[in-house]
Length: 281
Image 1 (spheres, one colour):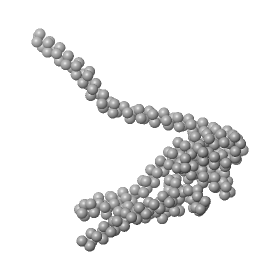
Image 2 (cartoon, helix red, strand yellow):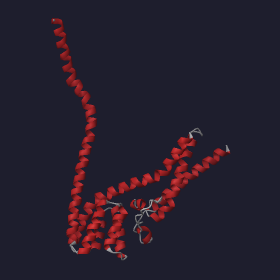
Image 3 (cartoon, one colour):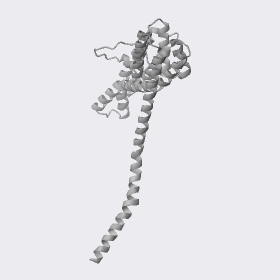
Image 4 (cartoon, helix red, strand yellow):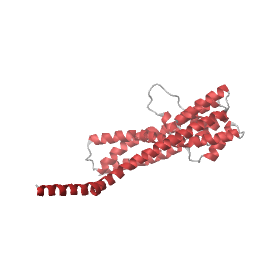
């Protein structure tokens, strides 16, 4: 009896710990607050050739600060790896097989990585969908005579919602430039922080434009046209895919009705004709 009580206490403690870690993970989201450490929130780990167990780049591309999330990532993995088997043992009264418990421990251990990959995918999708409109608005502000930094500020402030991850990253970009970082380096860091292919291409084009001194408005206008064309193409592909997905239930519903309304009367008439021929001969 005492062992069961201790088991329940450990399980409840793990659940409380996971809730506390989830709350701290939300606090680790990179923001542009003035009181936040500038170097911690903007730090991007360089690409390493050797394997590292801590996915700092993936965590940053999810919108979290790698330095702050480090104290949440490993405890969360261990808590889930221990908590899942303990919950199953509690529900099955200790009758679960060891292989199932080990499998659940592995699932719990790698579940934070799956969450990070899904969050990064969704975040990239939101940024990619917002980028075309943002660049178009940016071109308008630059052509009106604004500086590049002010144009970025206005385009993010009036063109994107506060919850949009692109706005948060642009705010960090503005802080970097204001702190003295070179513009081409700041744009390269922006592309690396998000991992969005379109932003990486845009950063490369802008770096070339800065080096050769080409008009920035024309460069961004051309990129905006490419982004709009890509969005139209993606929209067409999505519409075609939805059409194909809608055809399957239509076929499953209409094909039996087609058999009943067309083939059954025709089959009945054929059977009647053969019956008459049999009677004649």
